[in-house]
Length: 501
Length: 121
Image (cartoon, helix red, strand yellow):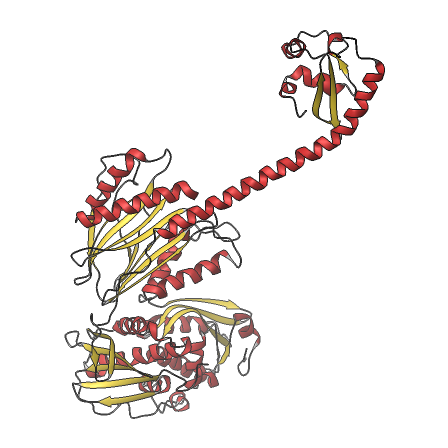
């Protein structure tokens, strides 16, 4: 006999709790429905089972078979029995509770595993390769899997669709809605051209079957890789950032999350990504991460990182590094984190092979002061895959900046109409950056070797460090005059130069 | 990597005038840097410390500006210190021998204490 449900009736419980021994129900005169019910079902004697002061059950006994009343011996026997049985029963109850809890936990873990499987199954296995573009993606579910997803869809006309979305809720329900959204979106994307219309269509498909209190935020953009033209619409998702030559901007377009209400319209916006521009699509797991003091990572930090980092994989790595620093070591990830980074590389679109190796970048900049920063940035992102040690990358960046400044100032006399041409070439263990201006100098120029003491004593002007720095920073520097005046900077890629200190 | 025109702030600490440099130390920094130096020495400071912790880009023109400051400082017997340089720019200060003519430390605390030579931390 386990716990008796009828014990929950207050009177019966009170009686049992106050009694430390068997209670004769016929002797009780209480106006209690519970008592009446017990009596009607033939119970004569109630023996409480008490363990450590807690009532854990009652032995209810009917009439003796002999129809005689229970004797005091009987009652003593029953009391003894109850005293022995109660602790054993309690142990049994505890074991069963723990088993049930373990089963729940196991079921929960299994559910998480299922959610994870669904989610992973619906994420792209590989990203399309677009000449002239770098695409990178990152997805990492929180322990309690959320509903993040992303997709990169190759469309039939050569354009490419980019999706980042987030289903409210977690676990299997979110994973199922995510997979449905992704499938409908894929189908609509192939059929329809305008991203706003695609979201409209997905929303109308999702609405009828959407579980209550669930919805999906989603950004969908379509890129023409040839022109860099990007059209996008947004269903309530966090705004992507775009880094352009003029700074970092948000891609804003209005629209309600998917699955809330049918018949919604989605605003459509467009922009053109220029050479070197980079885009970051992200989910709220990034900006809503907390540090140990419960401060949020926030949009401004993310925006700054987008502005500081080259695009593509390096941008994603940089965001992850910043996040790890912010949340502190060993912090558990609170929500799914998803990022898709897209960069129009400064490289010529098909990366042709020239006699000097693979062309990693080939661009020109007007001779406007400040453009050396642009040159540094474009070269940095062009050589991102070469694995240059960071100290050597910094040296190359300084050399490129100085070479570009020299070319703009001395070669092109800061005439914006006269561009500086920069070409980045990679072959074997040599990285060459060629900076060409329209000047006619056939030497490295700046004949005077800067001597700091002479400068401090006024025997030399304070300026004149550019060429000196260039020669110190790179492994080789040469001047050629094949097509215009070219300064070639060479870095040795394996164990070369002055070490990676 | 947008261009960040140099912002300067001048403050005093333990008898040293600290010039906090935020942004790019390049040609656009000339006016701000010279004005900050003039302000820093106007009170008769014996030492000026340049804080590079928030300087994100230094080019050859920036080096020349710092040389210019050193010329002025030497003329008036003022010690120049620098701290907070990222390792790459510290290397450049060494290559250009700027490090031989100014006390370079990693942190502001060390800059306040140090008067001779450079720490190698």
